[in-house]
Length: 108
Image 1 (cartoon, rainbow, N blue to C red):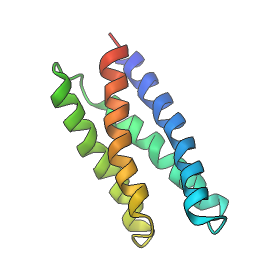
Image 2: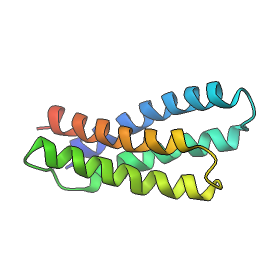
Image 3: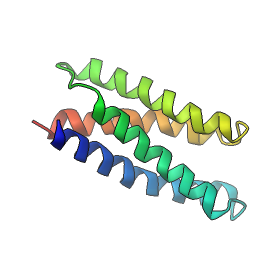
C-alpha cells in the first residue's frame, strides 16, 4: 500500500503541473497564483484518494473507480470556484483514470 500511495501522489503532482499549464493557457494570465496552487493541490488530493483505495484486480474496474474518484474530488474544487472551469473538471476525471492506470500497471 505504501508504494501505491507514493506512486499515486507523485502521479497526481505531475499531472497537477499539466493542469496549471493548461489553466494558464486557457485563461491567459487571469488566474492568480493561489488559484493555480489550489488547482495543482486538487490533483495531489485525487492521487491521495486513489492511493488510499484498495487495489482492484481488474483494469476496467480500476479505471472506472479512477474516473469516479477523480470526478468526486475534482467536483469539490469545480463547485467551490463557481463552476468556472468545466475543462478542468473533465481533466480531473481523465487524471483519475490516468492515476489509477499508473497504480494498476506499475505497483505490484
